[in-house]
Image 1 (cartoon, rainbow, N blue to C red):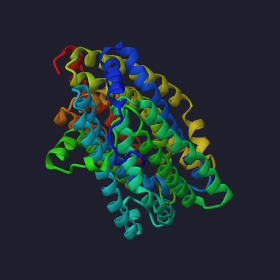
Image 2: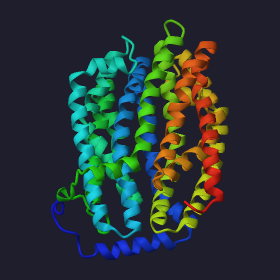
Image 3: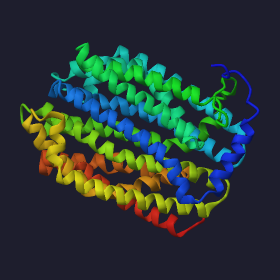
Image 4: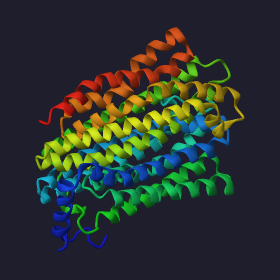
Length: 463
């Protein structure tokens, strides 16, 4: 990189002053939407890639779909580390910029990025040595292990880039440059779609083709994001600013541990879901059950990506104004984001519940059992889906304002504190139906946990 070892350019100070004024003086609703629209677009593009990827793989075989579903547990591990360093360093950067501490922001950017790249490299080497055991640990049955291994191969090779790409994306987004963060994510996702079709259908590489497509596209997206850090006004990545001190990692921990715990529990819950779906499914349809849950997770992630995008648009507004001591602006942006999220979720839930069978058939109509199970799972999740707007935005606000304990507890709710005991108890009485209901029950209980904190912050301007 031309400026990777260089000095800050002359126009950076002016760009940062202008961004500070925008973030702290613009009308809150318009500002949240300005920040949110690029992140919503980027999240939708990524979710659309996941949908198309599931479509391509679903037409290979049920076992291929199940193999990719099993591998999703490792993808959540990548997300856990990438978001831990991304949110941990990014939230610190956002607050530091709000307080005009630019040197501290530069040091944190380098520390977060290089740390995630290093851990990603270590994880890749270990995973490649223990490929088949890793697949079995994540819930692959004997007939699914070959497909899971094929998919994991190139995902493991690309792990360092995928982890640090998430870190870069969150750093750019949380310093108020959602547009370029969007460019980095969408570039990789769009390329992935074309490479999926090329490798799976033209080169007939099957599941391994989907994995290679993901690996290449993530590397390209990583490069685009790294170049983006060199744009005027952004916090630049400098090797000389890498400061792996205890204080630095404590700051990363305080801002990133809620994301880490959330994704760790997503990883654990995904493994448990695969295992329980296979265990409680009727003999001979284990792969169909795992594949059904995989498809529904992709569908719901598409819908949830809109809420994530809105929340991620809210976070830099929250962080800047919290750092500047403008607490009323934080409260107003929180109320606005929560209301918009809930309205969108209600509309999506009604639509998905009505057309559930037709939606599932898009991915694999050939498997009747898969369609039956997927339809039931999708409708169960639609029952409580409108509630997750409150819990998600509340969690994001507490994390961004660095209230680590509350944010961590809230982040553990949906996929951990409530999901794990529910999936262990309900199937004992209801069999596979209990597994199908688990996410809906966990979402409702997470809402009840988050509601008092949401009400407190709505009524109390003192953060």
